[in-house]
Image 1 (cartoon, rainbow, N blue to C red):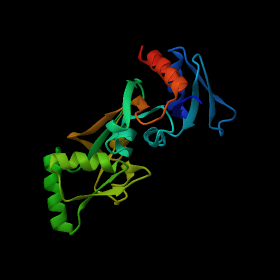
Image 2 (tube, rainbow, N blue to C red):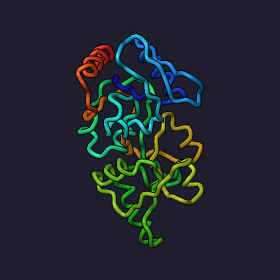
Image 3 (cartoon, one colour):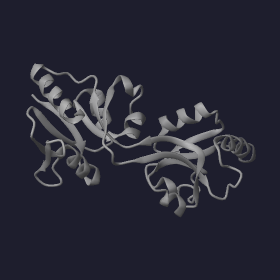
Image 4 (tube, one colour):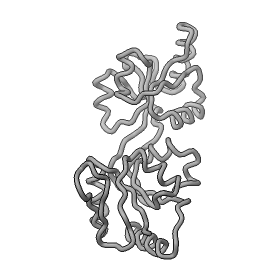
Length: 230
């Protein structure tokens, strides 16, 4: 058996994760073709690489099927209720930064804050007979954020595609989504609420609090933690 390290399986996130570990003397590599999700680890013993989608890694950590994994703060906090009991943050990796924000149409000149949004939602329901729709992939985070802010009279609608386009397509009145530059929001004539930052996210190394270790795995895990924390 070995310590299982879960890493995003493709794209810039995988490449930057490989670079981050290489700077710490641990070489990760994909073996086989791009369609094969197997990899190799050099520079430290007793550790095996598991290539997964970034969205799968929180679940695998929480189930104890991997010991450590790299994924975004947003995905851990969205997918894992009481996430602090299931995973431990080891190190932010300094890339993959993005903000989860609330945005409304730019033409809503009187809506710049969460209080304004609450008033607009109440007026919208009175006028149209149904709740203002906010399109998002992040239901748990957005619902908790709006509850804490005292915003009512809204409904979250699921968006698994281009969330920024839902307002233009008239399937939502506002959105909550991840953005890094804001360019796509501006292209779709949306503006971020002044106090509408839900979460700052970046790629982060996490440790499972529930994964089981035998003596050899515990030794390998301690060595890996010492290397990445040092």
